Image (cartoon, rainbow, N blue to C red):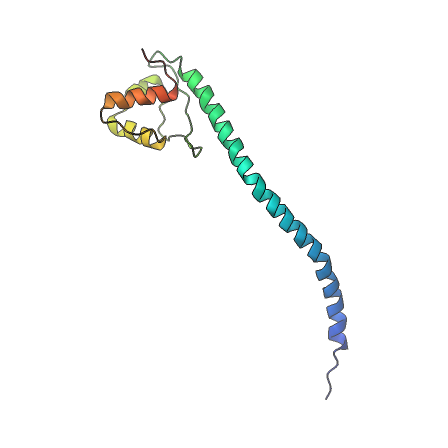
Length: 132
């Protein structure tokens, strides 16, 4: 008994033609992936610029807070995350305890002083408040 390869070869030819058509697409996909990898650092820079702009605006708004009921605008850290317990008002900021202030300072990478008075001062400066 002899097997005929003709039917298999007949099926193989269209598959080879399709494979040949896929090759340029694979090359294009590789080029697109390379371009995307090149754009990634630019996207990170753009995100960083946007975060700095938002933080700058927040500092401007926070600089006019004088009364306990005055609102505060939240800010993002270097990773783009806002402190979950960011105080909504000046009163909430002034009511923060040492543990809360330490968590705040750690979140923003500001270093943690020993005294609560210095912690509060550092937070106030960071968020843009005018300190007399």
